[in-house]
Length: 271
Image (cartoon, rainbow, N blue to C red; front, side, top):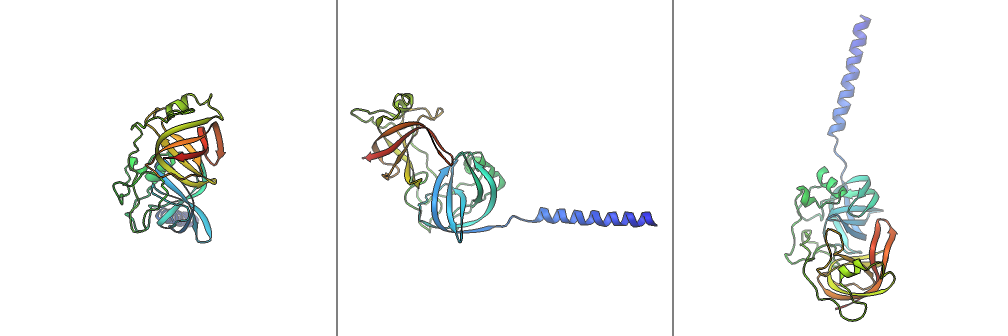
C-alpha cells in the first residue's frame, strides 16, 4: 500500500512539472509599445537603430532600414526585447534592444528569430528571406537620410548605391581619389586632403557631428577601400556630388563601436 501511495505521489509531481513546461512553452514574449522622440539614430547591417524616448524611458529599437531624423516623433509597431545583443553590422553591444517591424502604419515586417539572427550577423533581413519594406518612392535615396519619411508612407527600402559610377577627380593641390587616399593613408596622416565624390549616406548628430559616406567609383569593395567616411558640421544631401576638404587620420577609435582605419575629420563640403 505504501508503495502505491509513493507511486501515485510521483505521478502527480510528474504531471504538475509537465503542465508547467507546456505552459512555459506556450507563453509568448511580451510585446513592448513603442512611440516617442528620436534621440539618436545610426545604420548598420541593413537596419536602422533608433534611441527612442519611449515614455519615461530611453530604449534602443532596431527597425528595417529607413529614413530617420533626430527629433522626429515615431510611432512603431510593438516590438520584442533582446538583452546583451551584439550588432556585428555596428560592431557594438547593446544592453537591451527592442526589435520592431517598423512604422506602426507601414506594411508589417516580421521580426522573427531568423530575422533577429540576421541582424546579429550584420546581414539585412531581406537577404535571409524576410520581406523587405515597400518603398514610398522609387527614387528615394538609400540609407539614413536627413529627411524623415512622411507618417503616412511605408518604410523606404534602400536602393543600390552607385559605387561603381566614376566621379571626376578633384583638381588642385592635395586632391586625391578615394582609392589613392586609402593607398597613401599612412603618408597622409594629419594632412589636408581634397576628394570629390557622391554622398551615399548621412547620419546626423552622432557624437555632435554628422557622419557622411562618400564614393567616387574607385577603390575595392572587397578590401573596403571604396567608401570614405567623413565627419563634418556641414550637412550635404544624399545623392549630391561634392568636393570635400578635410584632415585625414588613421586608426581612430571613438568607442561605442566607432572604429575607423581611415577617416577625414572636420571637413567642409562644396558642390
